[in-house]
Length: 165
Image (cartoon, rainbow, N blue to C red):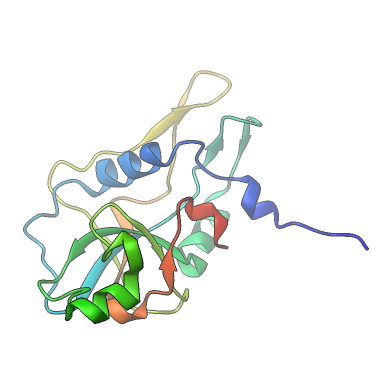
């Protein structure tokens, strides 16, 4: 029996701290934009335009697919009541890891939540150098594609966002 694998699993950041840094750089300061209640503001994981491992580039169209179909998201902000409840509920929902927090990678259905583009003060474009030494955009948009979801919309945590496609 032949097993096939998604090519999507092979195109990702090698270091997810760099992915987080890219998101925060392109977002800028969004601290004055707040979500309410049980809502969670998340940045959609977008694979980089340049893969240093194989030196290939990912097109704007392919990155647009990540925006529309992306399931993995970085938690940016939590509403004041997000992921809260009595101790038994929290323990049964989140186990030994506790409730999600800012900086965690979570995943949900691609169509869940309200999609928006965010950009705050001090946002800057992330670039890479192509094989000719020219600066190129790592992502084809200003700011960052985000979603606002209710806290019970998430399916789980993921260590590496490219694992969920």
